Length: 95
Image (cartoon, rainbow, N blue to C red; front, top):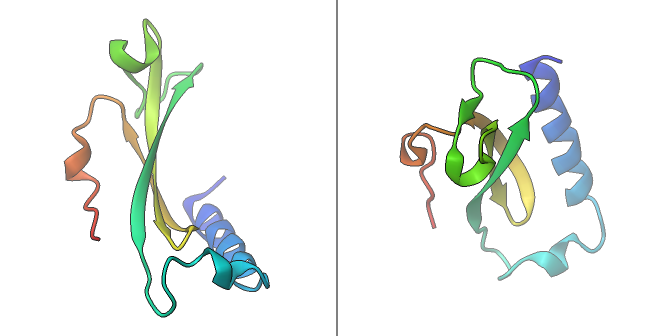
């Protein structure tokens, strides 16, 4: 799995969602786009460079944090960071 493959998959998913007839009904306002960041924490079994311990979220285990930039419910971009990293350095949420 490569980064370019994941980005191409994001593009396919976003383009597919845009073509659905129900898509305009999920907009908060017509003609306006709203963005948000969604962060999820995942525990992992195999150690990697990004996995770190976080007693608060994983107990004695290790994990990573996945951030997704959403615009009108469509995933535009994603990033994976270590659980020990300060989130603000990676995420700038513009309303």
